[in-house]
Image 1 (cartoon, one colour):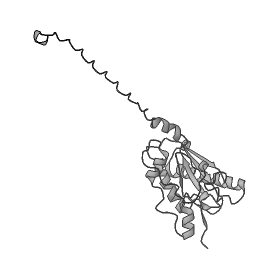
Image 2: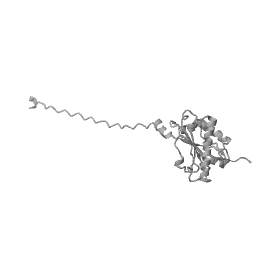
Image 3: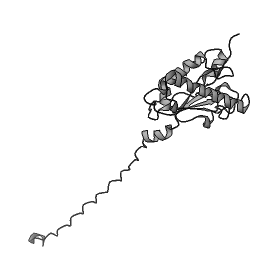
Image 4: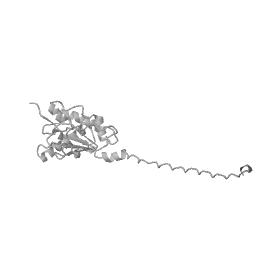
Length: 219
């Protein structure tokens, strides 16, 4: 019997993949450059297409500035990394090692859907976030002091109106200093200076007429 797997991160792709019985990868999977751009406050590229979900309401609290969600495959009910999970984490590690963000702190947020108890989900999400952290450290030599694992369980659902949706199970990578760094990297635009209207030049006075002295012929 084939080993069961579960999608532990899905911004858009997991639900579609399950419905179609196809691999999770799709045209909307983030590139390494898009991951770097999501974490880099100095990036000027267009935002990565991380949440194209027509007709679905995404809670604002689940959308963190300077972050991206990535599809990670864990063994069912476990924090064990599958071969697909390792492949996905290799791609994330490449982004985290990019010189533009290589010194940034990264928080690895683990999230679950609402199926199961609150404490069970919190522990599982913490274990999965920590598994990703340890993989980056051991397999890619990323500085442990840069990486923080946090498990949130089902407290920060991506789709609160559909709490059991697979898309709620996700791993989120965040640069917690993104906003403050962006304020320095991207200075506020200079205020627009309004040019005062030009002063009107007063019209030259009309010269006074000099009286004409009558001649004998005029008398």
